[in-house]
Length: 347
Image 1 (cartoon, rainbow, N blue to C red):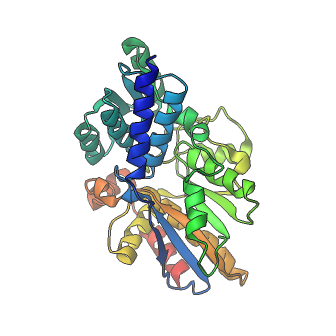
Image 2 (cartoon, helix red, strand yellow):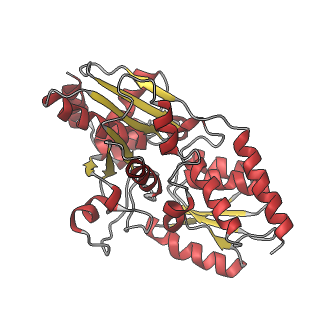
């Protein structure tokens, strides 16, 4: 490996990081919860538009410092979209070819963004086929399979260094309840929940971590049973939930888990648009549903405090899918019951 090229690549990524400001922490005024403060960490403002920008940066630095990438390496990643968009961005920054292996039903906007950054999209029929196909491509092309599902939890420095957990707690310092009662996070790789959970324990905070999981994902049943051999057909909420237990998911740092019906994710996503004045992605709906459930429990007990969750990406990527009533009706089903349940919580 050319050490000089690796040094230049790391410096390019660090320089890109210095050009970016931290993401905003948005305070929400939610009716019916006067004693509980809600906050959204807005990860959609990253250069590539999602939470996965942090992960992609960490994965590239991890691979570079391990000597896995050189100036001729083709980068391959298995991704349902957002991670691939961010990794394509950094591949272009370093002048490397990039291939995203993804299910053929991935949102068209994400495919267009990957191609905008110079990446190629390699499609498979089912989500559980992405792993083997990524491994095959990496071997065939003598490339590097980035493998976010294995390395997400170890590529990020959970002790600090401006990770997302550090950023949240620093931004909360001057709020009415600076130490959140709960941080609510959905799991895709499990890397972000691992970072947040470890940081909470490292800093000895009294905050609890709730991980929310969509229908047809194995993380929730794995948390309940400890059976790492579980598999499923895969999540219908793009970007979160998995058809298998990923190595990066660390249940021991999670205080509680909640399975969120897909209809609830969609209903909350649409409600958040009326509260924020802009569209958010479906995984943000999943997160916010979990935050509201925990807030309702706190309200029942007469407790007050704060809850922080994540705005993972913009809803503009999902105009043809989750924001299309016809698409939702065909792929998710009727969300009327969950919409009514949401309104009941707000009352």
